[in-house]
Length: 345
Image 1 (tube, rainbow, N blue to C red):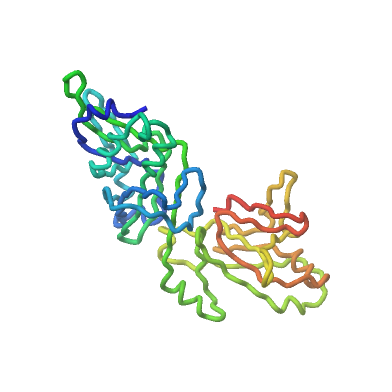
Image 2: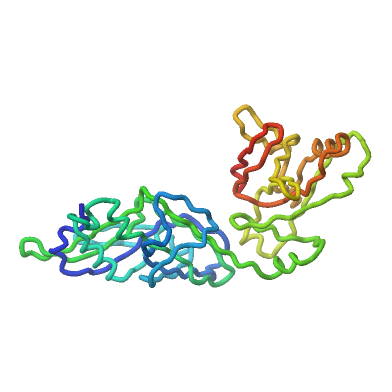
């Protein structure tokens, strides 16, 4: 069914708005100097976007048409109430971003038919004729921030305000399109620079920037001396990494937990299965293994059993990887299968 009263009765489009519910920000949210500029464009047909698929954060994105509208915002503005008045109805919204779009989009949507191959004949036909909208960040001022919006919130919608004629009487109405059931893609692109890239060319840097996922980085740690360490009883073996204080710590907070795994030159990444307990439900108990940020700005990992295996059983001395993932999948030798390490943010 068409969300418009009747396509032949539409007299004109008054305005088109995309409303997105604000869900929070990460970065410079307090100073008010960080302003985000965004633009909205239509996703073009036949560009590989499928609304029944899931996409990685590092997906390069999809081809879009020209900009339909732009907006600029700071996180502090979402505290303000927006009042919408339509006829005798008054609606108050808070924590939303409203972006005015070109009326041409509303005009095209109003002319979809409900018969034949019309866009409102079925959901599948509609998704073929209208692939959706892309919201892209074009510029960020100040120290920068990353903002989150809830596309499937009931207050998030594409709304077309229009005029129509019914039985010779002119009136106004709105057609509302909501994103509820189908997929979305979040494409995150990062451009590395500064000390982060400069340290990559140093053979043995003492300070490294570990960029969190998605598209993160890791520190490779090799300790060749462990291969020749004499056979002893290891009471405690720890890997300790200290966070270097930064002037932006209060803006860009550090990860609460890091993860450590190990791998050879050609095979997969392995879980420290001797030092990480796996309970009956298959969940990993990382409390004894460590990795959480402590009050002394250290991340500590208990590798006692792993090191004992190196010095007593002469097991392979792998390169260790220190990183900050959202989640990871590692091979557990004692189980003979991969295990998922989740909730690491």
